Amino acid sequence: MLATLAAILIVSTAVFASLEISQGAYGQQAPVIPASRERTVSVTGSATTSVTPDLVTVQFGVDTEAKTAKDATSSNAQMMNDVVNAVLNSGITKDEISTAGFSIYPVYNDSVPDPTIGIHKSVLTGYRASNTLYVKTTKLSLAGNIIDAATGAGANRVDNISFSLSPDKQQSIQDDLLNKAVLNAQSRAGKAIDPLGQKIIGVKMVSLSEFNMPPVPMYYGAKAMADMSTPVFAANQDVTTTVNVTFLMGDK
Image (cartoon, rainbow, N blue to C red; front, side, top):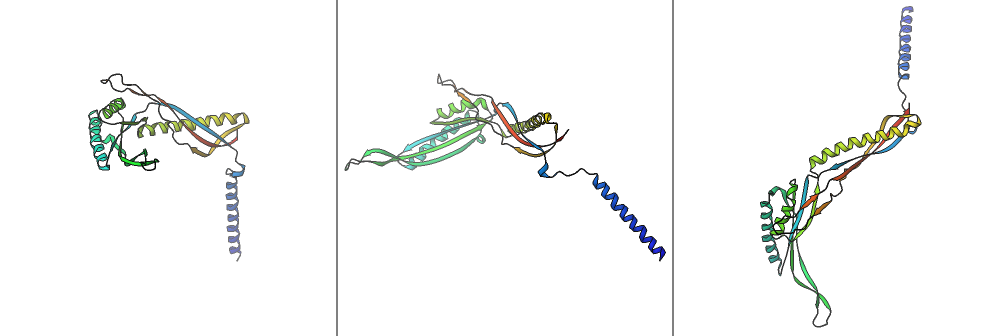
């Protein structure tokens, strides 16, 4: 019995000693600061770069009118085929041409007075077919040639010419700007809290803005002679991205 009591005493002592060691080790860990007691500073960082567009989109179309919808559509198709062939001959491939839209609708004349009562009424005069194409290419130097080829072959609308970034270039610029914007936010936060005797000890939240590239300015030159191409020039554009970062701060 004495041997049994001695064994129990030894085991109990070992257990209490283990608990004290465990509690002591836990007490030495860094305390967790409740969210309500966190000290934070929120900063907006930004980064800007000047970008040269590498993609041009030219949108143009053919509008035709006829007495019947069938005639308007047939005439439009013939003219558009001529336009497409002319654009292809200017150095553009079929993969770079897409249909933006096609529509056909009735045309009314509202200025014809009723012969019996003299009141103006709408009179169906025919149908209008409208076919719109756009060319998207990285061959920026061909922008003027595309316009000339299309209008020379029968296109009676040039709706829009815009310059933008190809997906690969856009992704590369976005990644670079994002990195610089975060570093800018960190620098601004450090300068703001330094006089307060604080330093950045962590990050609580990061909010990213959408990559934004405003429309690139474009300039047209009038055709002075029939054998001269239409000059089209794209200017560099400043692109900016911003990030909102909330930093955790602590005593120096």
